Figure (tube, rainbow, N blue to C red):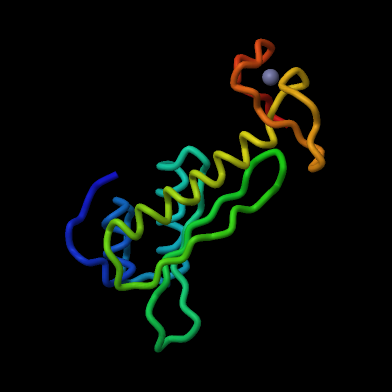
Length: 138
Ligand SMILES: [Zn+2]
């Protein structure tokens, strides 16, 4: 992902940081959708993202989250209020990716990976010979 050294102050700055298109003339929902498509493509877990704020007088908040396929579990979204640093944005995305990856690993084991857990899912066993530690898609 491209790096911007300056402080992120506006949703347009966020979009620029992630190399997403931003149109100042369109409604924020459309810019959120553009950002979300970009983040979806740039993350292994296919994360979503958007801009939100509770009130027009409030600062914008960048949100990123993910839904783990196959188990329909939602990763608790990370929120970053503007202004922030580029690292804050990257950190939030990484956090969601890591959480999605570990949840995926905990729930996508194949039948030979091991015992079913109390959640009803199997963890991926990296040494499993049946799936080569790849697990299986539920
Ligand atoms: Zn396996």
